[in-house]
Length: 114
Image (cartoon, rainbow, N blue to C red; front, top):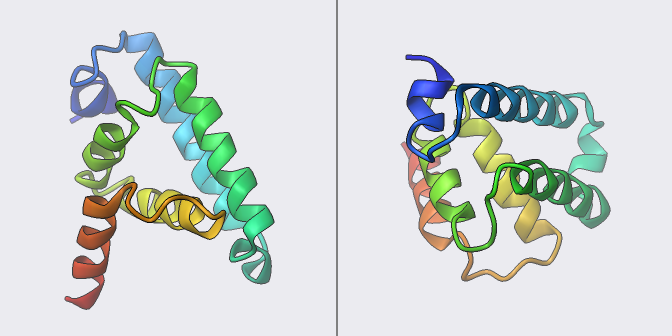
């Protein structure tokens, strides 16, 4: 199933928007993978990483009201599961509110215990 079918249609994105979002998410994933391991867990990196994510999704109409639905949906896909883990962790490491993304975070913890 393509990204457009799996994610884009669910959030009413055009094929072009789906493609752009997919490329942006893959670039975000690469940025995380290329970062030094000792830098990734710093609040400064976490803040920049989460801001890049916010900027990316903001271009497609996502905001505080539907970002959790997007992350939940992406977490359900094999390709983006790890990226969602990094996004949520970055949000928390940057000082984000603990109650936000709680359901996804609990799912991540549960999946890591298996």
